[in-house]
Length: 346
Image (cartoon, rainbow, N blue to C red; front, side):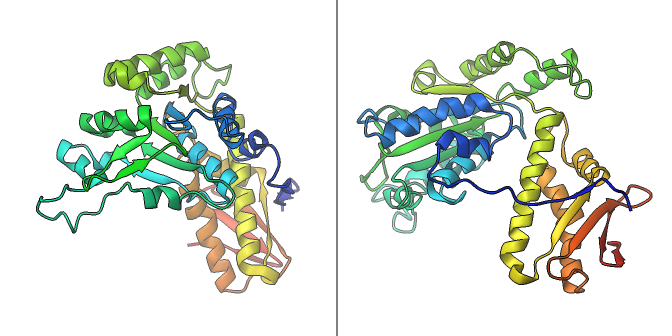
């Protein structure tokens, strides 16, 4: 048994009434600029000083996949409302044709299927993602570059006047909303510059932020009209993550898993202790220069969570026991040591 095995103990959570920026930093890794840009808009709204007649804030989040764009939106929802699900999310990949965009607002009266067509955006749905903790609704248009051009035109009124007219002539008000648009525009060129100049493994540093921002902004201006771009409050470029950020993300996900075990198993919960080799096993399979940390959750689920389920079903881990996790001798899978037994998943 290796000696460098440290149990995972959830870090004590400070009171949720604390500083919003601090709460976001505990959830988002490696994107400090995004936190500093978003928080003032929330504070402006909470102070009652947000401009009337427009959304509280409109943000376009750019950068390679797996850098935390969608995670930022979910983390903000969790910090404000207590749940990552408090987001009205529109997957723009579902609206690649102009006629599909009509599903967002519903068919107008007189059209076939009017009564059976319910808009994907409505005042009721917008209000439902607010909470007693905050009246601020969070709206996410994910991968906006995939949508038909008519969606961008439809959004012009939303981004400028905070209103959207539905097919039945009712109006949705977005003046209590933060609107996020995510996009991978320019991501391929950004990744190319990153690997060409430094190489992922070298970690000698990151490309200058200004260079990556120029690449992203050039791609945005090529894809969207000036009137659309001018209605966006902040365009934020997410930089590729390095090894230290991946380590921190793994820590967050392992802590979340430990809390999940404690919450679901109660008095029968056990504690996990991963060796350095087990951590490296997960990081090598769950992170990359191309996809960032996007695959890490899937890797954890396959190599850690699923075998733990078998461990629980076979009653191999007692209450309060430490389950030690290490790679097998060939480094092809993780093995789990609980008490005097060793569990080797098939």
